[in-house]
Length: 249
Image (cartoon, rainbow, N blue to C red; front, side):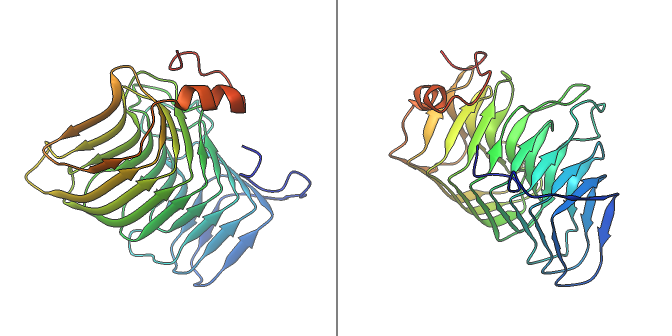
């Protein structure tokens, strides 16, 4: 998508792996070969390219708040064995207008109060036996907004968005005005892993190209589900977003 990643004419400064420990740091215009580790609050990573075969390309520590990752190209290389190169962004924060690919999971949330807007997550690729998800929310998470993203998972496994209670309860997840394609089911909300509840999930006005078995899988919870359309394949073809034959019929 042309509105994601750094500006095409921006000359990026080469860098190795970055470990950010100073609160309020702004990193912009850098070509990082290695992971970025954000270990301080209110750090902004913007207009950068980050390429890494590490476990997470951008890794935000669990205690950190106020992280922003914006207009970055995030490349997990796609060649590492299962267990490395798996997460495009891991952590919590505001993630806006990023181009994320060559990973197992585009964005894996680990904390509360995240905003995921305008990202393009595509060409999911990893070694080993990957379980591909565009956005993965595995419990112990609340207050998340997921809006205006395009997520294409051409694999017939997992999802564009996975919401489950594996590591704890889930509450207040809003999924609106996105374009999603593929997976086994395209959107999961599955509370069957533990006794922790999933409440306050709202899935509205999305364009969906259903996965191998359908558009949604809801178990042991009842998300609000309104205004969604299963015409996502037509929109993806119109936008010419690449080789999606495995999921688009």
